[in-house]
Image 1 (spheres, one colour):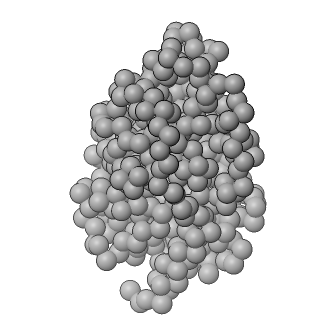
Image 2: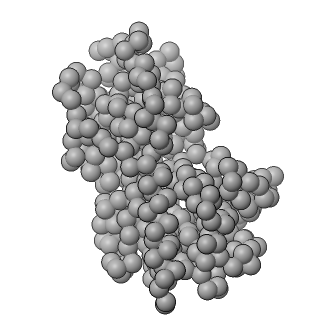
Image 3: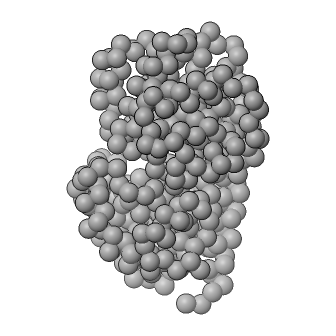
Length: 363
């Protein structure tokens, strides 16, 4: 098959959607001809390259804000010229699905929305209200809508006019390399609490983690490790200094996979404060690495709580609630329900089955 994948950002950019697309694209590229069409904010990075067997074409976008970008006509033209069997667009929180739906070709069209619910700022909510009609149009044209969780499917049905027969669920996966992690947490002088997420105060609510840790660190010898990058790094650094936590909180960005695995190995507890998630890749990785996990009991993350894999924080999340949950999690010696990972190999296999199903159908 010839597969065109269209997304806002691609590796080496870091994020849940970026990880999803990279991991599946690299596996599909072993058997199929695949090109990833993606956007960049800086024209210096425009061009074509190949990474781990995946051909990538990067185009300069018209950028209206951090999350609002419009692809150039040249991207749409190159997708059409590629004559793919499958056009697969990602991320309903961007303009990509709408513009991908406008490509006039005979390909089967799919959308993976990665839909997280309401936008996290007033400006983004206004943009989304304006964009919703266009996104509904894209969804109606899609031959399949791929959700990464049943929670995402439920959120989509509440907001969009979706034909249930089009929906397929293909969860995010985790790397096979997590199974080889040798825990180092018992060898550390202090307790290490880990969070892996974009530095985004509005969505990931990193500020609540920092304030929760301020409460916690006065009660026990501990360190908070924040792994990620993003638009609010400066504000986060400023908050850490204001609270006098420079020696207790570490910010780590642009880690290699090996370095990230080492952070999982050294940590005892994983935590996130984000209340809106379509899945939670870092949460699944932490569970696969056999860490204790604390998450908000909301959206897709509630499935981890309901299954007994993680300790839930009731929403709305506050620093006090997070600190209390972390304390309970750290002190709890009860064995959690064993988490059996769904891997990226499985995800690529299941998505490939959806492609094959589509290619057998006439529309």
